[in-house]
Length: 336
Image (cartoon, rainbow, N blue to C red; front, side, top):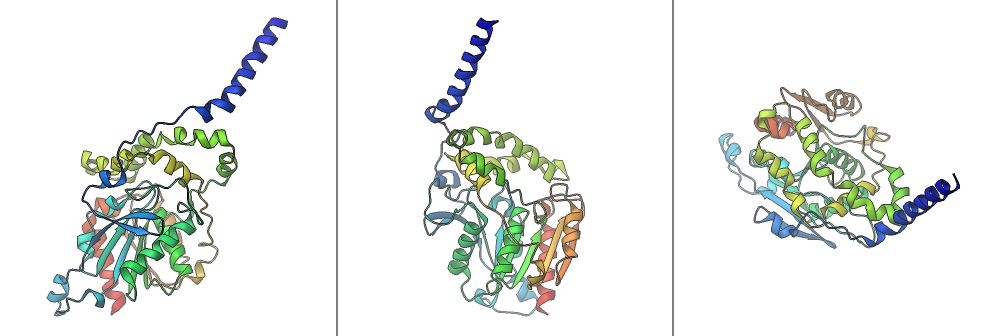
């Protein structure tokens, strides 16, 4: 019995020692091998925002529809800039099929939020955490200054990007004229404050990138749930979502995002949201349940609600024509 106890104590001590030491001495090897620019190719441009290079895709205003309506203006400054904010695990790729459609209403700008897509993935920063809500708002504000200074702005946010768009509009009413929230994840922010405590433990922080590597597989499950018509979830779509995982260090960036501060007062102060707002949801959304978007419609003073049939969490991908028509028709009606 005494020998057994000694053996168990020795094993326990070895386990504790391994936990304390191994994570700090075993290097983490990212599954990614490419730089941001290598992964992005020539699909967009990188714009310097403070310390970071943010990946942006743009589609210039097309006046074809306006010509058909008798408006010969070709000056895009007479028309709004439409900013597109993607959701969790997504990127500008999510807007690929609606950017040209929406350009009949103004210039269209989509960008990758930190930790996603092809934008920089910093591991150290001075000042505000770029992965947190406040850091994201500062980046958006800087992009508005670059692309939309003294212009009307339509802010479109999907899922987690919807929460960012809504809170930004609430805090900066002078910068946002109209708001479009697509399956906005406002009732469940995904914040994990308890992780911040563990992140302060060096061993846990070192293990973080190992812990999030599973996102490569779990992300496929989330994407599948986001589509109502699974036939539309082609290899092309899957590859488009997985492309950013080829970037070196994506795991550490995702770990930083997981622990970033995202606390907000959007729902608490939703009555102060004064922009005309269009809410869009898929008929069969289970990621952000359709009923949640309907519930939100009851809380926003000036809003319209559109439910796109036979789509789930990604109506802009499953039915880009219906999605684009809903946005354009609403913009035209709100201008009349």
